Amino acid sequence: MFTGLIREIATVKSYKNNILTIASKHKAKLGDSIAINGVCLTVIKVHSDGFDLELADETRSIIDESKITGQVHLEPAMQMNDRFEGHIVQGHVDCVGTVSQITPRENATDFIITVDKKYIAHIIPKGSITIDGISLTVNDVGVDSFRLTIIPHTLKNTLMRNYKVGTKLNIETDVFARYIDHILAHRQNSKKSLSWDDVDKIQMSY
Image (cartoon, rainbow, N blue to C red; front, top):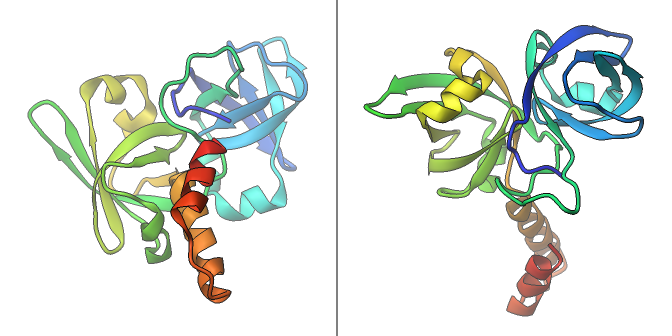
C-alpha cells in the first residue's frame, strides 16, 4: 500500500526484457514493493546506485511505456509505523489518461485530464485520485474528463511541471469507489441490494 506522496524523482537507467533498472538514492531491499509513476513493482536485484524491478505482462498491457523512461516518481511502500498522509493507493493502474488542457491561474494551475468514459464512475468530485503516483484531489468531473487544480508546491516538486497537452498519465481511481461499484453491480445481478451494514463493513475493513 502507498500514500501517493512522492519521495524521490528517480531516473530510469534502462528498460529491456521486462526489467526496469532505476538509479535512486533510496536503499531498497530484495522483495520490496516500490511504486514507479504509480505502478507497484517488486525489487528483484539491488545495485550500489539503485535497483531492478520486473514488469508483468498484465502491467505492460495497461500502462503507457513512455511512463518508464527518463525521470520518474518514486514511492516506497508504506510501513506500519509510517505517518498516514495522502490517501490509500494500491499502485494498481486502472487506465492511461491524457492531458487535454492546462490553464495557469493566479496561484495554481488547472489540468483537464481525459479518460475513457467507463472509468468516470470511479472518479469522484472532491475525491482522491492518483496521477503518475501523486495523490491529488479531483475538482470537477465531466463526461470523459476531470479537472485538477495544482498548487505551485506540487508543480515544483513533481514531474507535473513538465506536463504538456498530450502527455500520457498513469491513473489509479479511488479504491473505495471501485469496490462499492463492483459490489453494487454484482448485487444488482443477483437482485440483492447493498445495505448500510454492508457499506459500514466495507469502510471498517480499511
